[in-house]
Length: 263
Image (cartoon, rainbow, N blue to C red; front, side):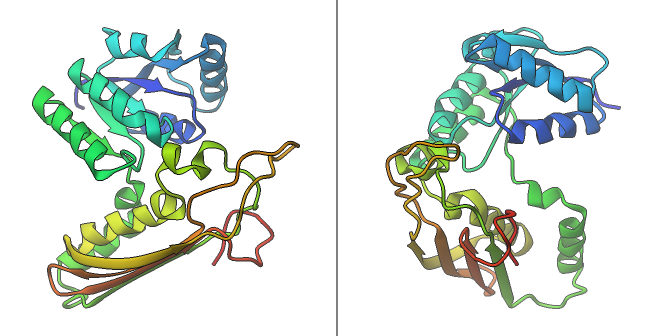
């Protein structure tokens, strides 16, 4: 068993609950601290997670992100902040000597993501994007079949992710200046990463996006500014190995009663 890795979680976003469990299941990870802008919110997150997937010793709640970056009992930080805030805190964590796992997409642009990479490289810390598909057992087996040659020479990759989401507000996720993009950055990006894990780098790509839902209605009441991100995206690409790929994603494929999953 490797030395225990002490984690700090920077934010109480919903996806952080799953990665709390993942840290527990890693065998050598422990969450020692959770940070939020409000300490009570961090404590509530800890209490709820501990009731479902408890650690032997409950983490402590921290108010403010700077303190968790500086904490001596934190070796690595998990950062599920809104996309527009990730670059700042990944860079600060790396400069403080912390290993980093950051949610996808890393940043609003290539330039932001490259700056984050350089910060981790220069600080000589491990850095990782939370592309979970690579670790799903079925996906790992598929990669084994491809790399082992049992599927022959791959020529085609095709991915479709069709969701039936409500057409109400997504909060910060529906604005380019905070999220970068919609479906393309949120879901299709997983399939792009997995395709490259299977077949190697993409040499060229073209595509299109479309927006259909204004998302001005806030669930529970109220209105907000209309969305300016994509609801649908489609890409066609060619891999350096010669294979070709097609990716399509949508959040508005009707017929599944807004239960989050399409077909």
